[in-house]
Figure 1 (tube, helix red, strand yellow):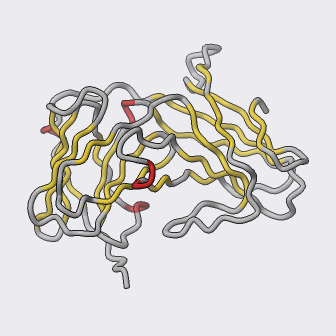
Figure 2 (cartoon, one colour):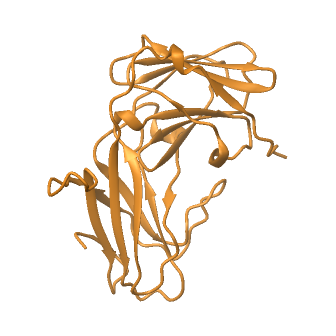
Amino acid sequence: MMSTKMAKTSSDPAMNSAPPAAAVPFELTATNESTVPGVQYFSVFPPALKNPPPKSQTLTALVSDPTKQGDATTLTWNGGSGALALFALIEGASPGAAKRTPVALGDTVAVAWLDGAFTVTPAAGGPANAIEVTFAPGVPGGGQLGLVVGPAPILVPIPAGLSALTLEPDLSPTVTVIFGTPFQLPKPDQSDVSKTATITFEQDTATNASPTAIAQIKVGLENQIVEGG
C-alpha cells in the first residue's frame, strides 16, 4: 500500500546564479453552453515535455470552478520560462502541497535526501533549453519529480538508478482543455468529457493592465470546445 506521508522540500535560492526571466500571465475565459446537465468543469493541461518520452510523463491539470449551463469562469496562471518550478515527492505523496523551487532553463538541479526531507538546489551549468536534474545517493526509490509548466505540474519518475535526468519543457503558448468531470490524481477517472481541444493564446496589447496572454473558449450545444468564445 502506498504511503501518503508528504516529505518536506527545501531549497537554497542563493545557489541559483541568475534570476529567471519574467513570468507571463495567462488568462482563459471558458463558458459552459453545453447540454450536459448538472455541474461540469474545465480541466486545463500544459504541453507535454519534449524530454523525457511522453510515456514516462503524467500531465496534471488546473481545474476550473464548477460551472452549470450558462456559467462562465476564468482561469489564470503564470507561464513562460520565468514560471518554471521543480519539486520532488516520495512515493504516494500528492503534488498539491509540495514546496516548489523556482528553476530556470540552463540550470543543473541537485536533488538530495537529508533528515527525511528532499532538498532541491538549482545552479547554473545545465543545457541551454532544458533543466538537468542530478540525484545524490540515498534519494528514496519510487518517488517523482514535478516540473511546473504553465497551468499545472508534469510528473516524471525518479530514475531507479538515480541517473541524471533532462527535462525540456515546451513553452509554446498553448494548452489542452477537456470539459466534463474534473481531473484528479492519483487516478484521472474522468467521465462525460468532451474531446480534448488545443487552445492557443494571443498577446493582449490593448492595455498594460491586461494579462499578456489571453484566450476564450466555450462549449456549445454539441458539447465540443470551440476557441474564440
